[in-house]
Image (cartoon, rainbow, N blue to C red; front, side):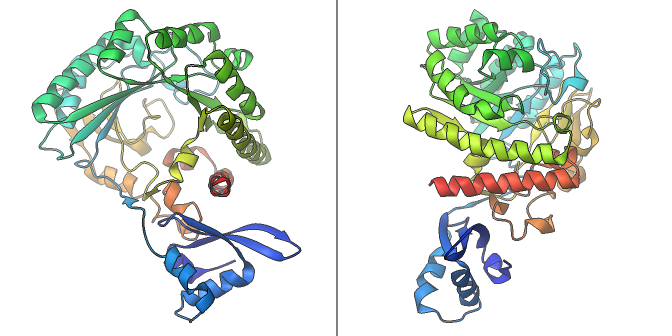
Length: 422
């Protein structure tokens, strides 16, 4: 059903079901958070109210739908960026079947002077007046494969943040097998928000990632030091129908942990046909929300980025990205780390030079950031428009147009199911 006047008021309509009483639609206003189930007739009448046609029965409903309460998270220019991703190396002791950066693997680590130069640029009152900054260490490879550089980065950043008047926070994503007493001390001292990539079920983890027992031992060691890491699992065709089982295993095996995040794999090579991709996404949505219900019964949180994004409105999937690679390049995606990877040139917009300068191609960055919710005509009447921000730019690159359309359908379905569950 086309509702252009409601769309202009940021009210979107999506079909729900058709039964003996007729067609039913979800009427959703993302900026108010209000969502209603309405008949086809009521939707058409709301469209007329948007045309300034009097309708006493629906006038109050329309007023509620158009009263904004949620702020719009806007695209951030470089002087507004408060999060920096640091890829310390291309080194990894795993060979995950779905890895997005395997092509760039080598023994390369970032040069210390390059790292410090980038930190000086990022943690600088002349660049931004924001009160708080965040550093995220991720792959690349595994950040703990460069533990000395990690410690250097954190101690230097903390000292500089104090000198420049910033509150600074830290996050790190790791496979959990390279933890040492020194790293655990660093995590404790600097209150690093730690996330372990872990596929939970032994046979699945060993097939997709490897070293299940070592990861479990690492998690147990962290818990023994009262460090409770987040757990992130990549969902593939191998485990998409086992999310409930994964939740139950987490509750039993790691009772000290309070949740898990399930994220759908982004790897077209795992799906031989578009129908296989569509079936995977359908299965993910069904099994994810079933797993949520199991978690709720045990006060155990089951998260997902798309579900989390339903609570906020944004102009772009990533409002901005300042990612430092082991080569000293600056990219707009933390999954893009090496010139050997596809689409590297589409995300690369800067460099730390040998003479310790950060050079940014602002025109290139502007072009990257222009790929947002306003750029794509198909987003205009989409119910998920303001939550996905035009969609992940990397997904738009790796998927064909037909595949990305299926991906968009999945994003919409996850939002609709999230609203229904509320």
